[in-house]
Image 1: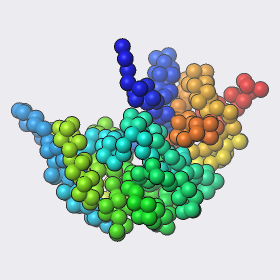
Image 2 (image 1 turned 120 degrees about the vertical axis):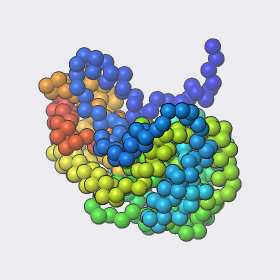
Image 3 (image 1 turned 45 degrees about the horizontal axis):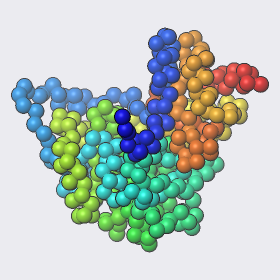
Image 4 (image 1 turned 90 degrees about the horizontal axis):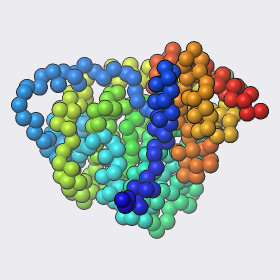
Length: 398
């Protein structure tokens, strides 16, 4: 039977590509420390689950296509407390940030249009672009500079007649980079000069370390027509399985288009939206404690990585990812070897090979993305596995 050319071009996510190998290892009784995927292990606040306990039997209706008003109002209040000027009428609730990505690029791009982003970039951006027939263009960011944005002239070299939008994750998945206000304003200047959309993926907004300031695109004046802000409760509250994301925009044409797509898919989950609205009312100390925990994990994984001979790495400033270069020729082959052939006390490690995060996959062959989403004891154990695994792999391939 026929399959579409479009679906044949869609790749498996680099984050989950090794899952079949891990499943087979688990079936053999191997414990795997999973640093491949950004799935927080912090507890979701109790108030989220109280919503479900209070549900009465009876019909479970569709929510409003745009999203429940209580969730949109709660999200808008959260934004305003951070100096981000969106009202409830500007916000559209989606099935996670993934649907927000798809809806956004369905709205602003035709087949063959081009979106500009960083290199490396979040692997699932590529799968969305492949679904929609969009071309990705990327400007390089240097690991030695903490993956900071290049100068404005270098970014501008990659803008052409096909460019529709600049897509930026901040703090950044996969690198952990945090962009300064000056870097943000480079993107703003280019977007205004070339009449481009800014698609701002800010799902890691809370994860900023070392007392650094955070600048949201939503705080910038004069880009109301350009800006499309994507968000999610997945990382912020450790609620990945809730699948609640959002799109925010002041642009009336964008809002009308997103609303049509929301109506087409009917609604996001009703109960999960009710529960998500409660999360935005919790005490700010929750987010402060979560941030402290992730900074502790960031510090530990960095300290352990720099002890491993041949590893080069910069300390990330945000999100919960770090992207080191390993002393191996191909980190995907090494990752499979680790899962299938190397254990310490019946335990091994899974990470995301970085090739899938680069436009030119050859440039990421020696790098990996590690998500420091496990507790400090498990991170310490996993880094021992990585260190001794590298040594054993080198001996085996001499």
